[in-house]
Image 1 (cartoon, rainbow, N blue to C red):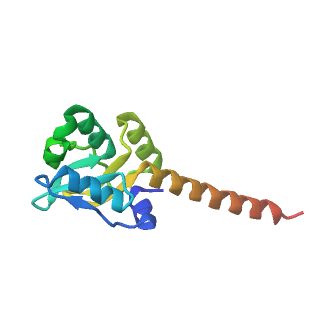
Image 2: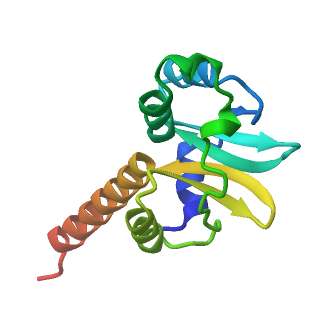
Length: 144
């Protein structure tokens, strides 16, 4: 299974914010949409990623000044990304090695989606379930 196939199953809805956006607004968007990351778009291009990890670190580091922060103050500025034709095993390995729970998928310079570790796990589980059903059906119909 490829990254683009997981995106096709998941859908390609992207939640974005500008780098100069308020961090408090970003948190509100994440909570209201039950998502763990926002894509930071800078003049139509991937400028960074904001995940709950950066939000928590900012809360810890800045305390009372948290409300005055902008997204660009705390975002991951150069997120690792993958291509649409990356195999799921390579994608999982990349996410594990980089400790990334959210991975942008780029086709050249175009952002086509973001995959979460949850999206990947769900796709793998569904693929394995399908394969198991096919194998059981094959064994059940094995010629005598």
